[in-house]
Length: 125
Picture (cartoon, helix red, strand yellow):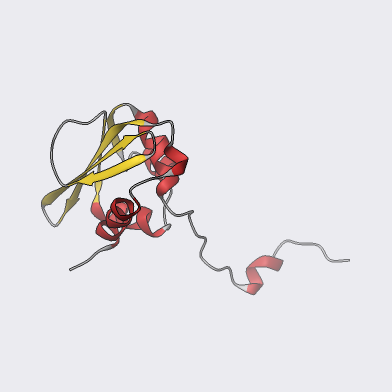
């Protein structure tokens, strides 16, 4: 069964190269809790070349989060830095790798606003 998180990491693995990470070398591991178990995803960067592994090897940055939050990040429904500031993401090691990694997430999307909400409080004339 596929979920947004596995689709996100599969997409990174398929691309293999991320031009926006051309000067980045290191690794980041995501420990995601889902249904009482922990999924481990480790992404290695070497000057833009990326590889995705399913292991618990040490990494330069380790991020712990609930898998449902990561699903929202992978869909563009949440922002990594906002989640970090709220304490929903816990990092260990080099947080600058998470800052660079967030470039791979889709841009957060806003829920559509109702027409009436756009005009409340605005002066006309």
